[in-house]
Length: 551
Image (tube, rainbow, N blue to C red; front, side):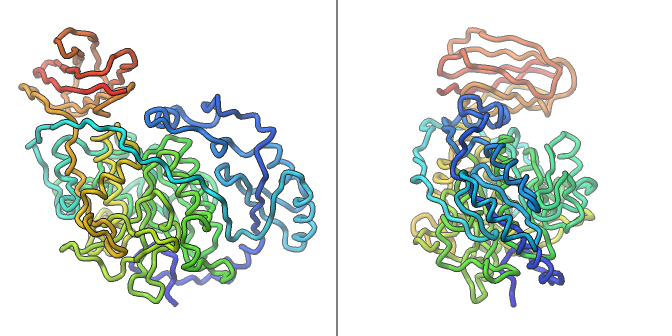
């Protein structure tokens, strides 16, 4: 029987421990709480439960806080955890409940005690979970004024990845200087074997671009030792082997989350993903990319059915929608079931407001294995497509090779989205998805095979025109247009002090400072809307760029 899971790889994984995993799952239970009464947290003080980066992201896009942002009431967790023979494994603030384990012979008595608590709505074996969601987000475009930017002709060889990047317009954005700087991507997958030693990740490690790792399966921070699929996915975005291989977002920052385990298939893995998504939101991640999907489990009573693919039934789909509504751009592989009896997408590809990614070949033709839509409630899926048949990845030893699967189309596109969003930072995640779909190759007649088609991330005008002057290097500014905090990346400059000057449209200098750091952060909260010029001067010359302040 073909597994409908999918870590969505080309190799078949034989589940030798399926029976033991199924038995273990019998002792996990989901406890749903009524409310968050008595919580010590308040929406007026988000810094107590969200990072500064997360708060800044929400402020940039006017994303409101709501009750789902508050952590689960601590006293509720402790009361459940204190029930004899019960252990709380983890809590979900978005779904407002906890997952627990109960010793087999005490299940009935423990659940009786738990259900007697006034704050408990229901309890049951970790299985289906349904919740009512608010109406769709208003996807109104927040940036109506974009500007031309001159192309940089200082290109570089992408090697074997040239075609899969060029198909999406990534080469164009890279030449313009947009390579993911300032963007944070969370990769939720299985193992990331050798990510800490693989030479293709030397550059991202050297600059501190791996922000952290978390194991949401076994606990701790070790994400190596359970396979290499996650590392293959990461390579599509972050790997750099000059002249041979360039990922689609080589200068983005990354979080690596292990949410999946190889030997068994249980619905608790969906809850692991939810924990990862909640952590990502708290950490201020911009983009979530996942090459996992679920339909069938070792315990058949937990299986999803096509009728459940409505975005509002499976716990992982519910959480994926919530992640998008909190401002993150969420991508998920459509699945590799296009040629099987199932054919359809898997959970959470049915989620609303996310980008479900299908796979195409070198000619732009849909791969036969790429899963199809629609969702159970009639929405078109996939949303977009990228190279997934003959996609180039990097193995744990540093060698690159072609591979098949929507698993790889997804991160290739995720990196492209990171570069595009970097260039259009004033747009929120929903507007970015809407724009990419509107100009994609199949936008005129979207369907449930190709979706809206293959996007061109460089189709939209990015940045503004600049006047290059003789200079021994280059610098990058993001976001542009900007609102409050402006980052100046001096990465290509020779070492030594440089002078930073900001002038208004009339040429009046309004800011001057010196620095020898690689990155400089400028608070522009007092600047009125308008066009400004930044001049960087050093021992090798001077270069100016124009920037735009928008409220």
